Amino acid sequence: MKKIFLLLLALMYGEMLYAQDDMYADAWQKKSIKDMLTEIDGKWKLDENNNVTYTRIVDAEGLSKEEIFTRVTNYFTYNYGSGKSVIQTQDKEAGLIVGKGIYGIQTESSFSTSRLDTWHILRVDVKDGKARIILSLTEYERMSRAGNTIPTAFTSRISHEYPINKNGSSKREMTEAFYKSHNRAVKTLDALEKAIKEGTTSKLLENEEW
Image (cartoon, rainbow, N blue to C red):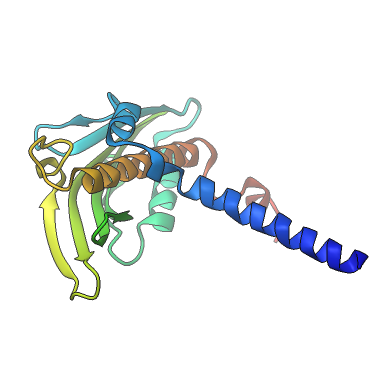
């Protein structure tokens, strides 16, 4: 009897953990359009080409232009070396690296589930002790399917969609796509800044005897 009780208790505990995971996983779904837009308000801007753009200056005191360039190159090699994410420009003398990549975003509405790939361009300029990161979100590549229908695909400029275009359709879905794309962009900036300051690979592994 005691074993049965313990088994039931363990099962109940497991269900509680799964429920908690679901709660955190679905937390964003409980955010309203207003909440999502308020959270990221003022954290992005449009450039002259109407791309959603982020700029970050990274201070890397004590590192030469060559060292920073190598670290940035390593970051691109790990993250932009396959599939649709590629390095487009790599000029060591000019201290310039440009890559084009994609963020996979999934959104849901009452009638359909959409897969949006958010295209972005990542540019890094380097010099002694400093780097400038410019990340631009350019367009959505969208695959949408309602029920058992054949999926439809189309591409659209992010600036043509809601919330940038206030007259855009599918406001909930496109706000969610924009919100998630923004968060992915910020994570990229954070990861690249860390790679510039600390390197991409483990210092412990780099310094091991081999």
